[in-house]
Length: 512
Ligand code: ATP
Ligand code: MG
Image 1 (cartoon, protein in one colour):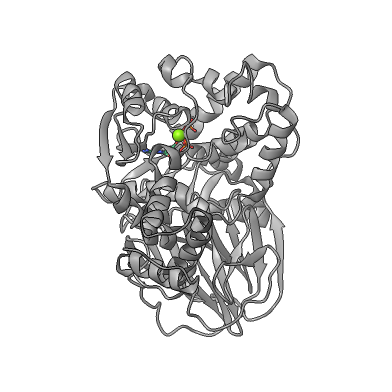
Image 2 (cartoon, rainbow, N blue to C red; image 1 turned 90 degrees about the horizontal axis):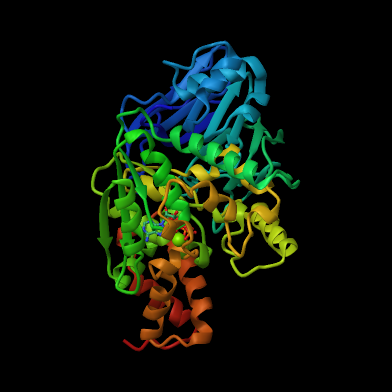
């Protein structure tokens, strides 16, 4: 793992020579632009042109050897293990070079070995493979056209292109855009630029089976696998790391493991006038001795930043946006660009944490299976949420090994002794204060008051209770149209204008 990964790219792969690499549209994530131009060595291979964005200008985007070219955004989390099977020491290799070595030994199957947070393009002969990590945590989009294919980690970059993508296997239409398709999570799609030849291979699926292990063993395994996932995400021993801390068990676990070994950790918490979890976060920060900062933002100011959340996540689902908004706002308040941020996001999905009142184990397991089967396309872990403010984010709970284990544990280890997320709480018992270990779950949108903030603002202008959901949905669609399809900078999209537009469309009167 380089300390400053490539955070995204936009590439045209074509059958004709490019005139230049193009320029980076100003509305995408902040970062250093690295032009990418690869000329074919033998006839038939595609030309590459475009750019990659990195946290710093020394990052390596492209690696080439023996007629194979790799472009990698993101990072790999088990570099030593990968090195051991490709017969090289991973030290000194960039993640792109490590993936290349893996490809040279295993071919496309090499992607099935990779545990990381990445989006990759690999070209060999006349074909191109576009691939997501196991969970699609870096969204990857494409637009095919008669003379090639455009591939980008942000859909907005492809919004205006000509060409209507054919429905390649392993891809789905991107919401609100015509002709742009998203590569599914855990999928590698092989394309031949300039043709409609395509096939897809799965590289990961959420496990459907459940493991029976003793409670003690489950607790030890969760502690070990999570510890490793956190450690591999921290960079070098002296690299500073920041954690977004709510004081809930998920983020507190990550902070506890990150602080192990005396590493200095900065923790940050967000609160609004409607709600905060400052007291709970402070208990954890004091216990672990982190450098702790509280950020407060008015609930109105929070909601007015919705265009940023939509521009980053590139989704239209109002409920998911309510989860993501507080993080987007917090990331934008963190001063130093280039900060590596770890979160506790996503633990609830494999552990069933959102279903805290579901008592029957069968029902709990069904909702876990459902949630693990439907996360794709929600873009909850998109790096753009942080990279819009110049930061790199990473989520230990969605490490492939952590996710495999947590999903597969039998539900009686998740709900036990009247507690949700039992196995995680037990695994962290020694590291955290008892108050934290036993603290009931509070959703991110509840703690910071996002859902109620958006509703409150709508009620204030006269939206009836029964119209709240439809107005939110319609507003999300307009934010998406303007920031993604029309590529307006989110700072120039006014919440009030969008609200007025939606209210008049729905024949509702605004009372300001
Ligand atoms: P629990 O699920 O037990 O409440 P949690 O609060 O850590 O644990 P979520 O509520 O699911 O987890 O929130 C997701 C993640 O978002 C957290 O793990 C944390 O990293 C981050 N987060 C949530 N709320 C805040 C907040 N107010 N300030 C800073 N970070 C937050
Ligand atoms: Mg919480």
